Image (cartoon, rainbow, N blue to C red; front, side):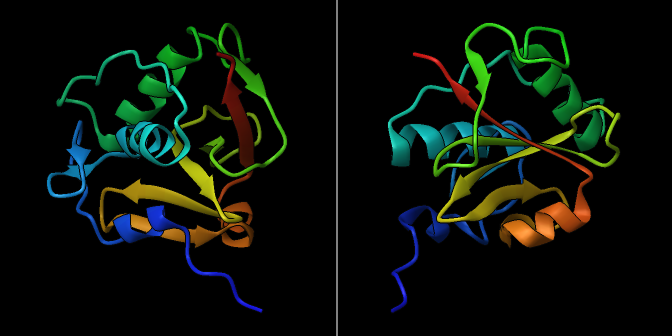
Length: 142
């Protein structure tokens, strides 16, 4: 039996826009994460401000994730590591020891994320593990 798609999957195809906050405007990876967690899961996502427009999207995402995690690569404060569950934040990095530089949100076993070149996409978790060497799931304590 197939299940209907998660309502957040309706955001697929929204454009990429650094600092965007709604589907008509577009999202970057972090603002998409915060929007989906707030609207579809009623969960808070701490923010630390959108980095300078002078940075590349990858640099901005890395800096944003770094700031939200309290300026460390380990999880402090409100964020705790978790098993992959619907609505959790998924932080991604290209190298096992490299900096986390991209993020998304887990919905129905797939990762919803915004990419500069294509906008909002839904990627099967298997593809995420293929593309990224470092995949970590986090949840925010209330």
